[in-house]
Image (cartoon, rainbow, N blue to C red):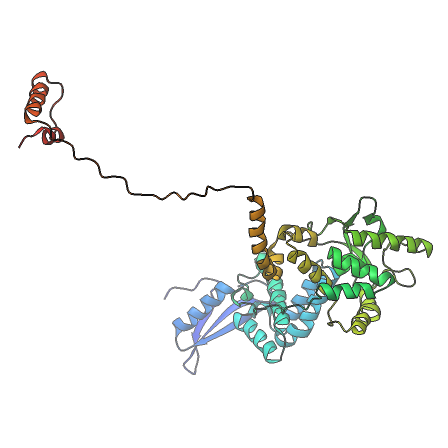
Length: 417
């Protein structure tokens, strides 16, 4: 039997009759770490070892557990505060408690499937399980790109399919009632959210120097977020498409102009448009608990979250026939995909509007009142046959003067038989 190549492992027969193979998968300090494979025959064990070697790292020092690796991965990467909190919560709450003690090199497809199955049996929602899969897949992809893992087990496990629930939004009448019942700063915030569809962080991070009342525009370039210590900070927007300039509708322009005059009278000279009683940036959680939710309960409106005002604004805009490209740009999206996925059903009413638009475009076109009926052409008249004497004369002339050799076609036409 041919000698096995270094790194392929060893296979031997046990005293109980089974075959066992050992394959080096890393090291623990100075001591090599090996994985054992068992089977009824030598070939079966060899196949197991070969499949494992193709999917996992071999002879690479991954001497740490999944828990240790994920903690190091979080520490080494640059995260936005909200993303970091989400990743850490998912890792500590849903991953390390199940497979955190497993060596990184031993994580298999079955381990990932078992993790998702346990979470499902525990009543964990689809959105959270999808986030667990995404977090683990992203972390192991780092080792795969660094050539420390030859295979990412998450790549063969389909993430849970998540279909977002239909969001409850306020209709035109409900939104009008909400605006008319609000007062002061709360009214201005609701008007800006309903007319410009700003995100919560963009709205609460709005600065006076970003508003040009003379030109009637507002420039969105920053957002208000919380850092890892819970402090409110201004940060850049995530994408280039999110940085945009919007024209102020008349209602929003009038409300902002009045609010600026009130701030000057009250000597609110801070940089932020919306502040708390002490002039500090307005914290979203306090605003919702103290102002927005009580107003909804007082008016007996649906208990929607504040972000639903953005969806209400987009829905009303689409129902009035707005182009999806313009809606996407106003929302700060790079493409219309998100707009069509979330509001596609609202564009059904635009089909009738498109037909009516075509009616207006071609309203001046006049079409004749007589209908042209296509009839079959008359049958051709039967031609008189050529006299035989003329046919013989033509044949004699062609043959004698060698004007052209007779072809089978000519012979058939000139034949008198």
